[in-house]
Length: 272
Image 1: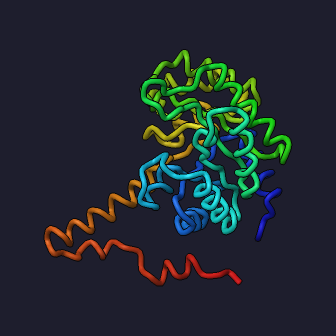
Image 2 (image 1 turned 180 degrees about the vertical axis):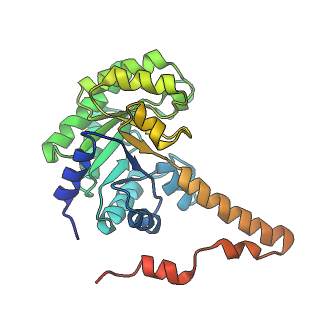
Image 3 (image 1 turned 90 degrees about the vertical axis):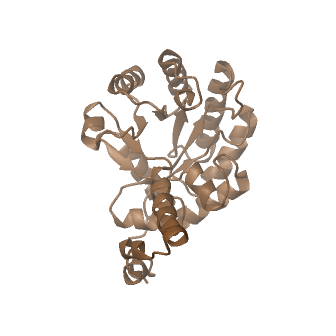
């Protein structure tokens, strides 16, 4: 079955209505197709995984690179894709709005905008500016296709400002500004997760997996679970361990853990 962009957007929005689903993060077309084959209902891009695949550090890719990456993924996937759209690639609300429109035009079913500046002295945008940026993203989406799910991210727990009260204040304001889903990456404790979920209810919350099982996160009221760059790191870990075995020991034994080429060829075969 080949679904249209509209059908994928409708399916993605419906996933946020009830229950809990896992939305893993591929870093290229191949990893996206592999995850799709396992039956996940939706996927999300990862800024870190994409950057590493290009030989760059996280947050050091251009808007043009990200748009091309999103287009490549949506062009091959039959399930919804949520875009890790970093900070919207702009500081001002007008710039965020312009770039959000470009992201929507790639065919994504949703996208996230974060409140991190990338600057160590002031890692979070000023509260009022941060809210205005989410409101601008909402207006931009509504002007193109209101079905697209807007996720607002508050980055305090991963950029040196782990203040739960401030995080909740921001997420509540983002919800009021039109965010469909709320996300505070870096929450580790069940009490923190519960506090955020209850504070923004009934709007759904995305949790970046803290190592807790899906059943526990679902019981806490989590609607959506993502893994960020963790799958990419796992892949790089195995790659580097294998390469180090060759470089340091002259051993190729780890090749035995690889998937057979025939299986990969079947996975990526043209269904036509």
